[in-house]
Image (tube, rainbow, N blue to C red; front, side, top):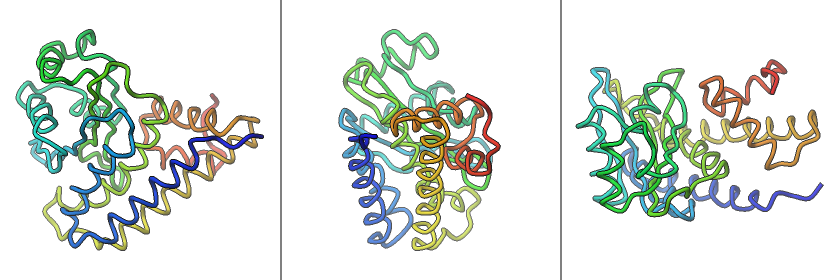
Length: 238
């Protein structure tokens, strides 16, 4: 079976995440650098951000690559709707293929389109079973993101959620090396689950990843949670 060309890119992405988290002095610095990593690693991403929702439901953008991202996020908070808020509220990935035609959030879509945002992808942040926010990327082109970008952003969501989890309850942030270890464990479980699906269903690597994504969407779980079901041989049938 031919290796998936995306595998090398995923390996490089994960190496970059490790480098960022290990070299950062604080959790806040690591989170700020993670959005830069998201923008760099997702080819058509024009910008990226991370939103945090506190226990009172107040939303804040804790990291953004630029002012346009911050403004697009802030408009969602002002309107009380949008892909980031929906990702957090439903614990599910939200994809806006074209902000000028997506019917779910027309006012938000029209406004951000005028600012040059034509598509968006938002993945929920979940830590210890609790949704705490979302990580999002925006693009200047419509239909900019595919399952591969969703998979990559979902991997980045793991360390971002770990870094921000205690901030939501105003406790001491986690040790950065602990965050790295947790993220490594999550990534390893996900990749092992992909391998299991490849063997069990005779799938290509790309198709196995898509299958894992499809199940996580349907079950409203993180990739790591869905991977656990696969590894425990309790995953729902495709």
